[in-house]
Image 1 (spheres, helix red, strand yellow):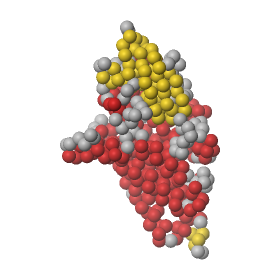
Image 2 (spheres, helix red, strand yellow):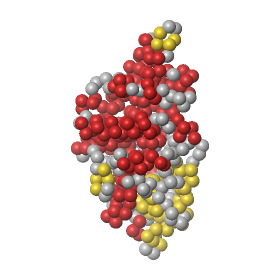
Image 3 (cartoon, rainbow, N blue to C red):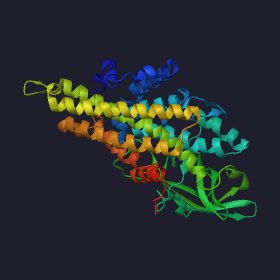
Length: 394
């Protein structure tokens, strides 16, 4: 089925000439990532998904493409623009949300935390190796009872002489069982602080969460922190309060705005290719009005969502992107992408429930993407507060 998604069909996803808004450098970067997805990810993703395997062997290739911490500057990081990062996220998620999520956890969360809030020693120690893929990072914020409300976290770091001792539990932490370094957020007597934690530190135990019906080609874990002792130098010096992790979440949410349009585009193109070849009642499914209406509705939302992502990217590159604007993108694009993937699955009929076709896999993955980095409800309330000036979270 992948072979049907040729260049002509890919062009069918751009109804309004979005490519004319991109630079030659942006188009070239997108082409490199798309080629990687088409040759490495798409031929193998069904097997990885079915077997619940995250392919660690492709990390060096991702690093070589400059996908790890790609929007960060200095310390061995690629220093790409926000729009270039977004285009890469879109192409990666056209392959699978789990593979885009790896890039997000590594770069937008773990590396961003060190880049934004770390000391020079922490940056020099970790970022070059993370950019080259020899060190994997994870980001420990969410807890079993503290997802949308991280201020209620119970993980606590107490002073013990010049050391910190951390106890607590984190859940739904991507990559924790394969990471060499974890960014752990904990309550202290001074408020919420972040810590750079080598995962071989005594008291750090990561356990894989399984089985899963979503994001199967990725790794999510629970972390137990039991009397984990760290030197004072492990604290992120520039992160105080929830602003520290929220600034990193903003980076990850921005990538999602682009990424989910990749899952939607791949599902749309799969349904388009199938409907052009599938014969029913003497002609292709694509020749029926109801089919064309569905395809048009999908294409419209993909074009609108991609234009929204591009506008946010241009604002981010200009340094003017506001948090509520990221919520516009996260809420709208996740909501529309999952609807597109579900509709595409329905258009495939019974064939759509097999791993020979991508839409149901994408739809299952987007159940997770729609939930993490802020649920629909959280982003609705963020926007509601921006519009009315009244916080309605409690």
